[in-house]
Image (cartoon, rainbow, N blue to C red; front, side):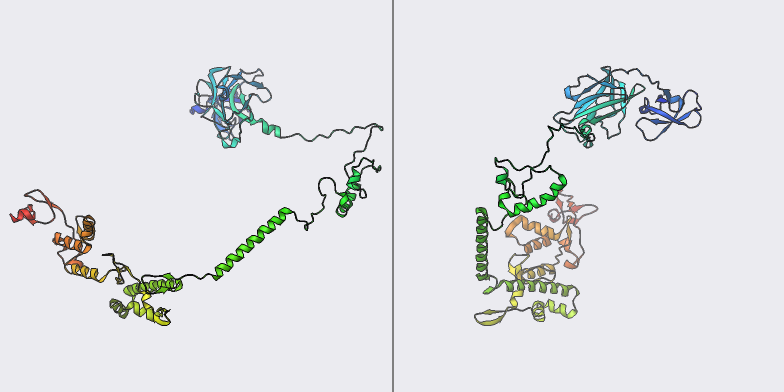
Length: 504
């Protein structure tokens, strides 16, 4: 007996006046007492118990009377009500639903066909796999319904039939489930063996399977003449004799049945017209392949003409020349940064390529008109000058090609104070020069553009050209004419005058 005399263990109760409004109306069973005036309640559909005060419990009185009628409405006929059948054994209402062409159907329930007493889930498109709450009966749930076939675990298909059940406890719906009737019917009952029937002696006949005789061919077996009467059929004896029947079929062609060969292997020596055609096709393909291999062996690879070198160079020599050129370039860069002092002096004199080629033995020999000549020039490939785009063999220490004329012009402007890193109006001097070349096109070379920038912004290069630090030149407004200028003269106070106003 529980401490509170109004409730007993095992009673069916309903939650009321709960702080969490969603728990109101849930049905459960009292499992044990927890202190004074408190019970552990196992709610329907839950795995764990909940401790509830007695003031939030209301006893459910079970009656044997049939509860109020329930109707089901769904998408299969535009939400028309259909009465459901009461199942007293399961204490539920049930109805059969067939899925449409899209394999998805939605539904909800009405108590006594009234939309003001609707039973619906806690959210839209509820299924058996989302742990939803059953709500109602009330006038809510306008956009909430159960849906079959939308969840991937339903495994539903168009045309399948489901039994939908709404379970009641104390007259209140607490659970909705459905099951596939096709899966239920697929569980076949155990196989039943029919009882033996004793036939009369005059009607009893032995049922014998087809079994050709070892001594009678199939022609005689199926002839109109009656065959000799044999002893009754025995399964064990037939299995033993069937082995000899197969041997008889293999030895005698007359024992073949009308269809099938009964284990007789096909004679591989007998080739039909299809086999002969396949053999001819394969033979022709082998002959074509042999002719192609002979032609490839007799063919000679033609020489590749290189307009940059005298005569012609074989592909192997050309590849070796390109490799030697890369090795020489990598050696030159290594000496420029990490080589010995003597090697760097040699590099500055411009003879490092020839020296490294002779040291590594990379100078190749080729035959031209019967005379052997050195082809060390193969390692000196030409490149495009970064200034004037002309072809040249002169390589800078920092990498890249530059012809002697462009190099002299660059050395001249460097001597006058040019520094590519000087900042002028937020950009480097080199960027200003390139922008000037892009604007004027072919009429202005990059060397001429550097000279113009150097003359236009003399104050930016005032500290000695290439050894000077980057200097920022700002734009100021002339106090006289109001024009923006980067060069001028400082007046009294904050006054600044451009060149034109200063001359006045």
